[in-house]
Image (cartoon, rainbow, N blue to C red; front, side):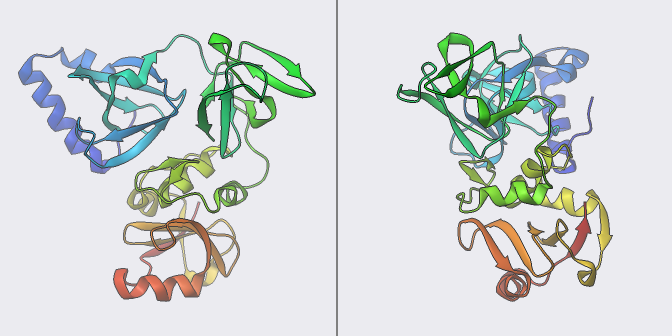
Length: 284
């Protein structure tokens, strides 16, 4: 069993104890769970089985999780990627059968009802989504990967599973510039500050915790402000930003409500009046 994020561990224990009292399942089976795959573009993961409850994080199409309990149309799951625990609609999941062969490598792309960009779109996908490709074909010079059910996706929008993107994670993060800010978001449709760090690092083969407090306490090594360079992280209470160079940072933020560039000094002055000075600097 992987380590759960600290902020969710107590809730996990409480829910597990409650499940034992209810006699839902035996504890060993409950901890292990049943494997499942996300079958919708983006599945918000919530602290409670309630659509009005805010989003803690998101699971992307094709990502896997362990189903720990199901009741009232909701599944209580633990994400395989980072151990995050919460509730998603039961119909957002499918049984795990075929392993993913490819990963979406652009911020956003479409899945079509066939190998032709003139056809209607079945749904859209974010970078990080995982696909099982069953074939490929070409239409008017454009190569498509074929998926189950006659669906298709642009081939050059994907990379083989296990392959990482070229460049550093900062170059991945900047591809999300002007993406809307979304609390709990972790996709090309909407993303928050720590979600940007996690997803960008994931795409170059590095792991990062989901939340900024966990990133601030254990990601990489502590450095001073004077040492800041490209790829370093700046933390405030409840916020994280990525240094693009020694003087400029990139972050998903609630000020512009987008992923945006900002001067480091400007950001420190702007954020300081409400959230005080940075709490630390780290080098992943």
